Every structure is written in C-alpha cells, then in structure tokens.
Amino acid sequence: MTIVFLALLTLIEGVRRVPRGSVVLHRVLFGQWTVEPPETGDRVRLLSWWSPLASAIVLAPREKYRRTDADTVRAQVEGRDLYTALFDLRVLGIVELLVLVVGVWFALQRFGTLGFFVAVGAVLLLCVVIFTALAFSAHGLGKPWRTALRWAFSYLSPFAAPRAADALLEETLRDVPPAVASAALLPADEFQRWVRPLVYDATNGREVDRRLLEGLNLKQLSASLASHNGAGLWCPRCGATFVQGESCSECDIHLVPAGTPSA
Image (tube, rainbow, N blue to C red; front, top):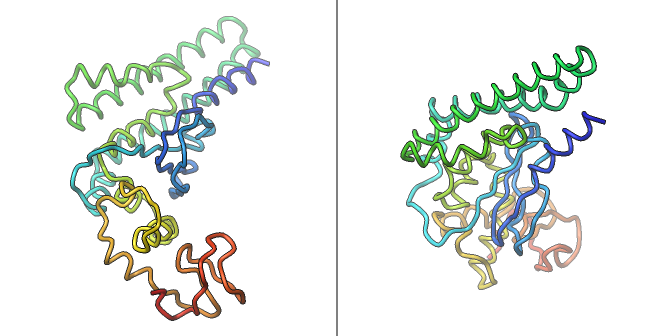
C-alpha cells in the first residue's frame, strides 16, 4: 500500500494547468521530443508520468519574445553547461524517484523503522543536491542568486524534485518563440508535421494564433512545404497521403496530386 500511495503522490506532480495556445512537448527518458497540436483552451491535465521517466514541457504563449533562431537555441541547449546540467538533473531525478517510491517501501519492509529513516534521509539528501544544482543552473541563466534560490525552492519537495530538469529547460525557453523552440528540439520531420497546418492556415487566410509562428520565415517555410514527393494524392494542410478521394477527411481540404505544388 505504501508504494502505491507514494507513486500516486508523485504522479499528481504531473498534473498542470496548460494555458490556451500552449505548445506541449513530450519525451520518454532521453529519447526524442514529440509535440502536440496547440491547446485550444485553458485546462488542467495530466502532462507527465513520473517525470523524468515520461516528461513534458509547456511552451506557454507570451506577448513578447526575444529575437533568436533555432540554431542559436539548439546550440544553447546542446552546449556543455546546460546539457550537462539537464543530464545530471534527469539522472538525479530518476534516482530520487526510485528511492522515494521503491526504496522507502523496501527499506521499511526489510529493515523496519531504521531502514525507513535511512531511506527518507537518502531522499532528502538527493532533494538538496537537486535543489543546489537547479539553483546554480538558474543563476547561470542570468537570474540573481536570491531569485534563483527562490525559484528552485519548490523543488526541494521529494515529489517535485524529479521534475527539475523539465523546469530548467522550460525556464531556458521561456522567452523563446514556441515555433523556434520546437524547431530546435524536435526532429526535422516531426517539426514539419506540426508546423505544416499552421503555415497553411496563415498563408490561406484561415484563423491561426500568429504567436505560434513568431520567429519563422513564413515565406521560405511555406515554399518548402508546398509539395509532397511520392505517389497518389496528398493534403496540403496536414501532409497526409491518400490513394483516392477528393478532400482530406481530417482537414476538409481539397487533395492535390503528389509531386505538384499545393498552390
């Protein structure tokens, strides 16, 4: 019963409020990022499952973004200092999660009260290490020490500490346009799949949140997405291919032959 209770408390940390227009990126362990369609309304939802085993970051819309590009953001995320901090925080988060959910239960069953307190002490020590690493990393992003310590303080909680790597990455990308951040983190084909409907809507007078395309060269991107190699028919909005038909079942857009420009 103890292990189930601790697992549920940790899982609740993955429940977050997602503002309208947010872009949500997911990953499993150290795998590749994937992306969801933009949120159509404010809602509270379960985003991550025992982060950092299955984690998520939320790129919330803002009125103003700093000017940057995908290559610059990618270089920052893959730079030695931030990459090492993110990697270390993920590893520490996995260890802390396992000790909290499995280690405490096992120590209690195997060694009784003494084992329980030793396991709890190990969890608290890991939380302090995560908090310290997170505060140093936040200071490295330009936060004053007092602000960095205050921001990292909530991750002293044993249930929040596993999310430290995601929190640091979110903070790094806070002022970056969502499309630029997505282009930097996602594989090229995944990014094109996500951005294609937005580009189509923007260039064809359909309703779209322009903040989602901030920082992109819309003309260049539209030209690169305007054709589809292969056989059969394809939807110029979502890129889905069809053997036959007149319109896309998902987008209700007229299909065009593959190999020809969409407009």
